[in-house]
Amino acid sequence: MRKTLTLLVLGAAAVAVALAGARATNGRAAAGLRLVPQAVMAPETPSVRADGAAPACTAPDADPSGTTKTYAWLHCYTAQQIRAAYGVDQVANKGDGQTIVLVDSYGSPTATADLQHFHDVFFPSEPKPNFDEVYPQGSPDYKNVGNGQSGSSGAAGWSGEATLDIEWAYAIAPHAHIVLLAVPPAETEGVQGFPNLFKAIQWAIDKYPPGTVFSQSFGVTEQTFGGAASGQTARFDAVYQAAATKGDTVLASSGDSGTADVLKQKRDTRTATFPVVGWPASSPWVTAVGGTQLQYGWTWDPTSDVPFTSDGDYNPAYFNYTNGGDNEVVWNESWLPAATGGGPSAIYSRPSGQSSVADIIGTNARGVPDLSWNAAVNGGVLVWITAFPQYQRAGWHVYGGTSAASPQVAGLIALANEQQAADQKAPLGNVAPLLYKVGSTSAFRDIIPTTEGTAASGVLDSNQMWDYNGDGLLVTRDPVSGWPVRTGWDMTTGFGSPRAAAFIAAVRAARNTP
Image (cartoon, rainbow, N blue to C red):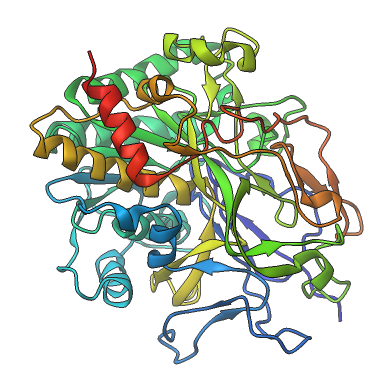
């Protein structure tokens, strides 16, 4: 019997896709209704490989059901593996005295317990997590959960995003004060939902100490604001400016739909026919975090562009890999399909800090993203979640998306701010301008065009999306063009991914030099 694949689309800046089967049947993983959860959760597919080989990913301990989850072809990373891959384990400090705020609608009723389990598995020798879940506008009721995308029915989907955020900010800065900033009303369209979110962000700016790092994994296409874009975004940018003035850092994920995304018209069912960029990542007061695929201990080697067989199982020719290697490429997974967001803004002119990359942007516009981090699902991070088991299996899941990247970079900024504080220096504040002072140096791993295997899907040289054809199997390039991966800065991965110790030293020097 042919299996079908249900795409439960849960986001924008990092489209969250819960795949109940094993293949797509209806084209791009379009970003549904907006301001909903934004992480990409790996499919719950069969965990046994036909060739009898060991699964690519095995969870570190059993689910509450007693089952140890495995993923046949999809790779995953522990906290220690990510720390080693990015050199975070070579940074002595761990975020003492720093605050990281993760902004999510609804939060999660099991956030404290889930983060504690994450700690117990990956950081048993560290102190208990310093964690708070706060609701400055009142706690949600969690009624009618799982029966839609808006109102309290969206809480189940948001719980996955919130859990991803807190666990992986903690993984990078385990001594930091981790705050889950939750807002009960989650609207399905950005303009209506933003005021409540920004009231909560302003509350947190006023409450927490200078140097607080905010990570946002939500977004809308800039065209959502229509003709009033400059006026509407100015209201929200005033909050970001207040954060920068205080010495806070604001990050946002750049998106999971490459340059092709849905528009506001017709309840987000209309897809743009031209390249688009997501907001708030495009704001010059925000540091935009793009996506890469980290291949740490394995190397993708596809010989087919067909991800799934006709009966719904993984196609070994597509997911084929070799053991060994340490590479990082632009995030563009045709099997989902999903890719890192990036491109020139349609709202903001080019800030002075980006004058060095003006020829790459090619127009007087803010270019996105500024830097990047692993966002892949094949090569995703392990997240422990027990909230709403009727909606998602309680236990370990593999997550990707640029919303996995942003909270990890937030952790890295917290480590830098701790060093600043130790030297009696001001916190980094708005980080984006500092990155262009640093430039393409050893502080970053440059992400360059790469070809893996012999299939077209393995040509990783842009963020142009892929589409499934009518047969639901073969994928081909989307007609909306993408932006090329280049040596040095580009509009797919920015300057590339941070090399932790060198990155911290470089941005601190840029901040401390008059």
